[in-house]
Length: 192
Image (cartoon, rainbow, N blue to C red; front, side, top):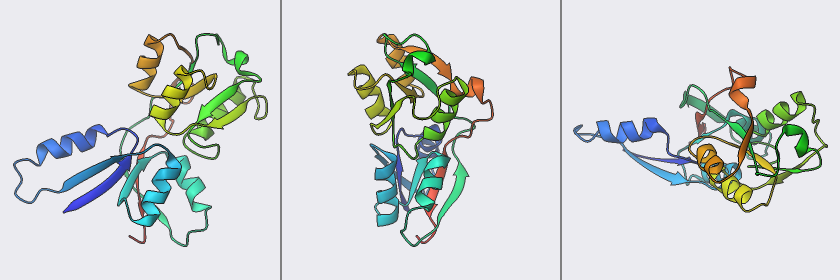
C-alpha cells in the first residue's frame, strides 16, 4: 500500500512509522511531498496528487468555503500542539512596532492566520493596522523574513530557533497566550 501525504515538515509520526515497518511483511509506503503553501496543499488534495495533507485546522475552514464539490475530512491528530512563535526581524523589538508593518503569512485566509490575527488583536493591533503578505509555507516565510521582505511571521521548530540564531527575536508565543491552541491534523478528501 502506498500513501502520498503533502506536508510542510515531515511529522515525527511519519518517521517512526517508516522505521517501525521495516520488519513488517506488508508495510505501507508513505511518500511525503514537501509543500510551499496551504493553497498548494489544497490543489494536491483535490486533484488527487496527494491522498492526504498534514496542515492547520484553519486551512480546512477556508477550503470548505471553496467551490470544488466535495467534502474534506479530518482523520487524525498529528501533534498535541503546534508551538508557534511570533518572530520579528532584529529592528522590531515589540508587537506595537508592527503597527503599519507587514506580517508574512502562508495565506491571508488560512495557514495559522487566525492565530496570528488573534495574537495581534489581543496585543492592541486590530486588523487593518498592519498588512498581511502571503509568503507561503514555513520555509518560505522563514526565508522571506531573513531577506527583509516583511517585519514578522509565525514560525515553529526548527525554523523559529534558526531564525533567532540569525538575529531575529521572539515577540510572543502563541501557546503562552492560548495554551489549548490546536495541533496539526491529517486531512483527506472525503471523495477519495
